[in-house]
Length: 234
Image (tube, rainbow, N blue to C red; front, side, top):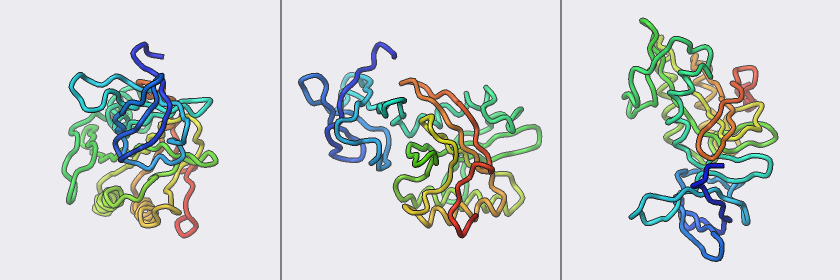
């Protein structure tokens, strides 16, 4: 464990981006860099890994991880995007060997996607999604309904229909997933958009990672054979 990190105990979540955590005999506020529900992770008494925040910030700490017993789960939904360049460079997604990042957050439709990759004349648009929810070995996204996430998939599907290459990478920030798919029970409209994107040729992969309190370490890449799809899509 990194020496500057501290363990606290989860008490409450007064808003989406703030936790109340017991640290020794006091209760402190910690910034939570994750807008998801995290209902299965943030349970009473859960041990929370904290990193001291820069001086002058309202919250003294940032919540970076949660102890699920046999492993840590990362609580930072921005970490997968920050680590994607390393994943690409180190070959965590072998199909993308030779690609390089040409642009970050390129415009796409009404918004932006995460990365535009190039390899010679080839171009590939990639959207990266953070996953913290795993049920019975299945990594599920999202853990809260997401209009923005659905729009991303629809825009990738439009690219594919037009003959471009597009992909979505679900970065699973915990090591216990062996399959992945859309959380159809929670967000059926996202699941529908996901199925339509697949039908249009959008590639879907999941990168299952271990978390050491600071970085993600790829364990395995899950492909189409590992998809868990809702009945209308399967």
